[in-house]
Amino acid sequence: MSSSAAARENGLRPEVARIRNVSKKFTIRKDSSIKERVVTLGRAGRRHKKEFWALRDVTLDIYAGETIGLIGHNGSGKSTLLKVIGGIVEPTSGTVEERGRLAALLELGAGFHPDLTGRENVFLNASVLGLSREETEAQFDDIVAFASIGDFIDTQVKFYSSGMYVRLAFAVAVHTDPDVLLVDEVLAVGDEAFQRKCMDRIRDFQQQGRTIILVSHSLDQVMELCGRCVLLHHGEVIFDGKPPTAVARFRDLLEERRLAERAAVETSAPHATGAVTGVSAVVAGREPGAALQPGDDLEIRLTVEASRLDEWGCRIQIDDKMGQKMFVTGTDWLETPVPPIDGRGEVSFVLKSPALGGGKYFVNATLIDDQGNDLHNIMQATSFNVEFDPQATGYLRIAVEGSATTGS
Image (cartoon, rainbow, N blue to C red; front, side, top):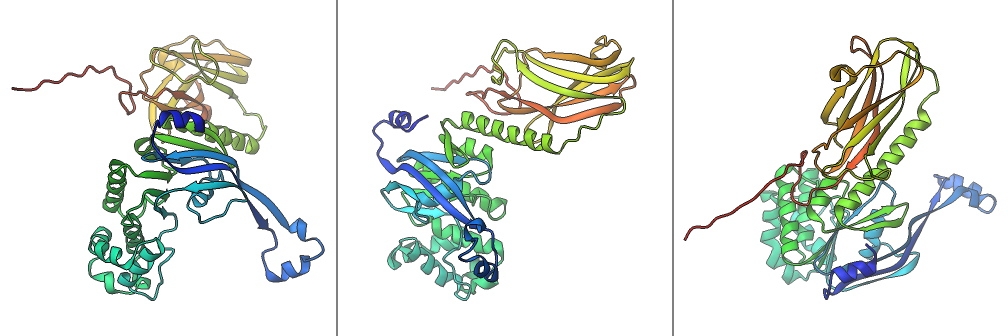
């Protein structure tokens, strides 16, 4: 979804941030000590510097009431973009225009002083975030209650546990009454009870029509909270639209990188008996890489090479994104005739209308002997996507009919 498409979808809702052609360059120094810098100064200094573009020509329109997820691999520019929007980092080029009060949950407790008490730090941090003393006094009891630190409010924060520290910092930030909330990987702070409290506060903000821009590595969290998702790759926006599509594309990028990294470290040493040398997962009747949709068949093909095997077979296992086993079958269990092999052979498994829930799945492939013992296996040899079900979520796709009645 382009910025113009986002504008059409958001109708007459006002913009709260307009980002135009924003790029950000950082200079990374390779000489780490003062002595090294003095030695390299004036002679080969340029060779000890490297330019890194964290953002490249980013253009976005953000509208009131949206919850937007920023996703991408480490180093893709997510946090930098959030800091640019928050005014913490100046862009190298481009412009950012904003309206309304903005609260940034980026580095919790950045305004805290270790020698001050929790009470003193609440007023200090709240003033940094734009609250007057009167506004902070009005919110103070709620902040302390939210942080759940009780009698420790008048203790110096240098004696706080890490959990108490971030709870108090989060409590201050979410009580600043922001129009736009910037959140960078801080919804995982504290224990489970506090995390639930954080999520409840985020949902309260959504119901109040506030704008939330969220960076998270938890793709399930992004799917749950966000109505729009921006995928960054090497500092560029490569997708802006619905979260299920953005998450699927991001997982494809992660899979491409994983396979490239594995290929770089794999050796070419031959296996003593034989090996699975190729695995593919193709949706029947669709172009390569297409997502599996209801009613589609999935064909998983294995290429096997061996010097001489008279009795052999193959098995496949399908795992979800967390590595949980979803399905296993094999030529031995299916009683599929397998001729002797001396060179190259192929095995095909056609899964008829697999009722898998939406998401990315991985295929493990194994070459076995006549006793079912493993001769060679490849974990996560390939992957495929399943179209998300707009009516349900989970591991399975099940047809459901709903009805409702009311009494008089």
